[in-house]
Length: 378
Ligand SMILES: C=CC1=C(C)c2cc3[nH]c(cc4nc(cc5[nH]c(cc1n2)c(C)c5CCC(=O)O)C(CCC(=O)O)=C4C)c(C)c3C=C
Ligand SMILES: [Fe+2]
Image (cartoon, rainbow, N blue to C red):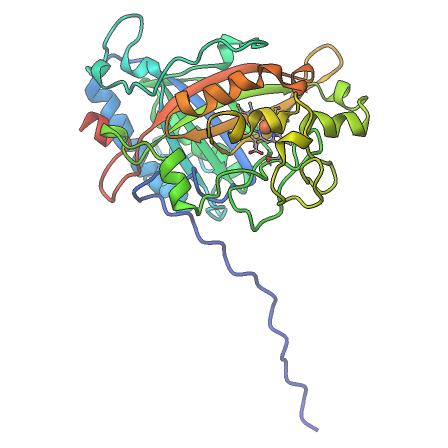
């Protein structure tokens, strides 16, 4: 007979499309959570408003390119051989990996040491409060604050790190990195259809989150509405150490009581399925979920988007591990702050400690041709 006809096609998974950079809201808030994080906070080291705005414009062009999987400027090898390349090169050949870059402005941008460096003191939004001291906080000033924060999320850590590095390179002389954090495992989901990820305590985390698709809830609890922040959101970050060695010596029953959900399924106490409604009365009075629940906090809700981290050891024979907590909300005075105050009595506090902190006003999204911070500086 005739020769065999080749029917098998080379197996090929379609490329994952990039996350659009432009739009009414910044990407990286309701975007389905990517696998990896590189968060960086910068101090602005100039007093020159024009220089700052110039950098923000350059950052915006670079961010739009990188999120499409394109290099910065003339690329890593496309420029003058006699000059340092525009792009640092380590993402060459990598797909966009759903990279998002989300910018936020800290209090120091509006006023620093009593000085109105950029003429925007009066534009500091009331919701951009200084976070109060919470019981149990042991904040390291070297892991907090910053005038500008960038949340880079991608499915490939090399892509997220490349993006932050190139923004830092562009900003040389205008901004300096103050602190940063890598995150490796998402600890919450904004897409209820997906399997809920687990945190370093082994529990499903992010079950009761604001879904990125619920426009009503997002308008009520995530998107800011006033002035230059309309369409933006407030980002609270907390570097939370988790004493995993102590946790690992705690009985399963105790662990489940502390969280208020079972470890296997993630079902709330007294229920059987993860998505079953929480029955507050069935939880211990100091259970985490009970104290964090909207019904305990006058309806306060936040969109959680945190990541796990491990950064070597603490020098005492323990892993420096934990949760890099990230939450977006319309107003931290009605979101993170009351919830965290309620968590003062949390049974989980024996096993965790907040060691880093930041709060940033994330402006609305950018239109084609616009730039990050345009509604503030324009
Ligand atoms: C101030 C806000 C919160 C901090 C800080 C926080 C830290 C933290 N949480 C876990 C583990 C879990 N949290 C869970 C639920 C949950 N947590 C918060 C808020 C903070 N958590 C909220 C608002 C909720 C949802 C409450 C509800 O509506 O039911 C859960 C259960 C699963 C889930 O719903 O996500 C776990 C597990 C750790 C380990 C931690 C600090 C390291
Ligand atoms: Fe929690």
